[in-house]
Every structure is written in C-alpha cells, then in structure tokens.
Image (cartoon, rainbow, N blue to C red):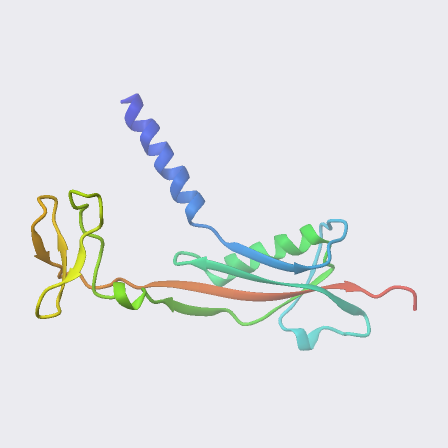
Length: 160
C-alpha cells in the first residue's frame, strides 16, 4: 500500500511539472516590485509617463486559461521590476504532428530495439507489434492545442 501511494505521488508530481505555463522574457531587469499596474492593451499606456523595459510570451498547453497565463506574466513582471504591463490578445493554436507521423503512432519495439514504423504495399501505415508481426495502424493522429499570451512591460519615467 505504501508503494502504491509513493508511485501515485510521483505521478502527480511529474504531471504537475509537465503541465505548466512557460514564460519567455526578453528585456531589462530591475529590483522586484510588489504591485504592478495593468493596462488592457499597449495603446492605453501613456508613453509620456512610461517606457518599455521588456517583452514576454506566456505559452501553455491545454488545460490553462488565458487569465491563468496572464497571472504568470504578471508574476514575471513583478520579478523583473516592471511597474506596468500591457497584454496582447490571447491566441489558441493547434499543434500539428509532423507530416510523417500524422497517421502513425509509435508501435512496439522490434527485436533490434527500433520503433516499428513503415508503410504497407498499399501505402497504409503499419507498425510492428510485440511479436514482430506487422499490423495496420488504425489510430488517427491526436492534435493538441496551446495558448499564447504576449505582454509588454513598462517602468515610470523619472526626472521631468
């Protein structure tokens, strides 16, 4: 029983680590802040009061909403010392499998340890099963989706 709970805990940790929002930031870094002003878009930012210090993209696979991604981008803004942030539109896009993999999924390993991909004489995809026999692959490709949100970070102008 103890072993099952340990395996379940490890699976939950791995799932939690693989399902996250990836934030890619480019720009200057300042002392972290605790508060950040939010603008709905960059046109609302008074450029006579603020200047751009950096940009970021937040990307997450299925299971995350745009507000959750924006929250991660806000955390990044506070971390890099931004005093304001403007968000771009969120975009959901489909991740397409590679063309050569579109109608195939990994089969079992063949005796030499290779994945058994190939085509039958009629061109239909095939794979090898655990006995080394060729079998048709009837499973269709499964598509995934990702959501991307962009942010621009600002700091107040000083010395006027």
